[in-house]
Image (tube, rainbow, N blue to C red; front, side, top):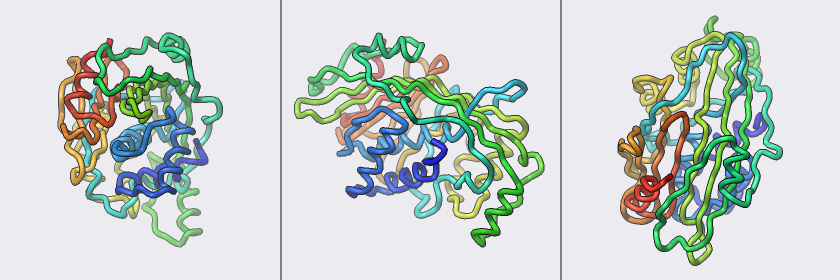
Length: 314
């Protein structure tokens, strides 16, 4: 993953901006092959799928557990965040300019399995499956497992100064409490199930993952957030929304596009969630956290259909 962070962030900016070119689709396919379950159709659910990708990117740029580290992020709830106003601003700063990323490997992470039981055994947690499905989903589901990864990122004021000088641009001076701080993240495992319709098109995806845990050897989450959001090129509107989140250490931001989608807070299985989309059938999804896991249900379905699938998970 170390070699792809900047490319993945740029891809998400293109997808969320509405690009639907052949090149963007190919890049999206490569992204899924590296990080998430494959064969999610582009078609009408492309923008929603991109939003889910950003959820995963926002919380998984780094990771590895170490003694003495303080937990600074472990999602217990979710909240919507509108990305429609960012325009050409950067979604995320290029971390290569601020330090060194270590660990992690995309090789052999994604594995096709024959059954949900096999997926549960590989991921080491019991995977849920819907008891009810929309009538148009006629094909048997496919199951895939991403076994997860751990990575770490160490901030360096010296590297930041050198990068700014080399590229002849201004970067904010790194605070003393951030210089030398190592951020670690443990991500996954993740199980995904996909269902196709009678035409062979992907119609529904159900993703369930162990919630990521982010730890720091020094700086707090607010200190990290304040510095990175001050980098030139990052959208001020996006920065304001992130800073307005009441408890950033336990709230997972769920991106959506207000000019193309609806988003509202809902309750799913007794837990706080975010519903994206409407009842047009073009595309809808639900994201929620419960008992240390993140659940995502989305597809080329109405919001009522997606909600029915989510409520029937057992």
